[in-house]
Image (cartoon, rainbow, N blue to C red; front, side, top):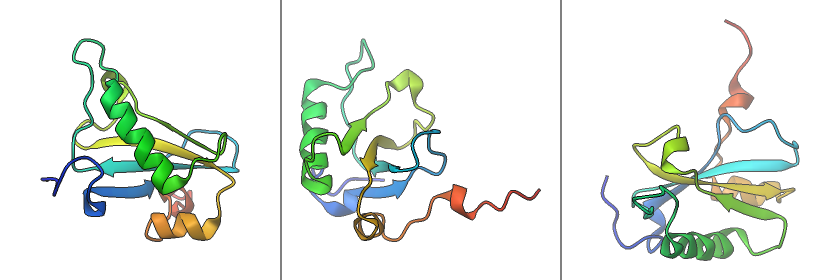
Length: 120
């Protein structure tokens, strides 16, 4: 999987989907995952995002999700906490977002938890 350009330069290098197994939080919060074809640099000693990668993510999140203070937050797990290592990603949580906006940015994705019928 090769990126077309620099981080966040081309939309086709990014895919926004629901987190299929979101945390047990307020149902008014929509938990999305932003998957990228490019790496977002971590400090090799701490495993935490570098200031440059945090700046890149901040700018992207502000551009795509808006900068409404308190309604949009993002985080990127430390390397040691990631459940998926093969593809770079970070999380975005939206408080009471417009449903049409979410449908648009996720390309009508539906979280797996909504398709699970509970039967075995």
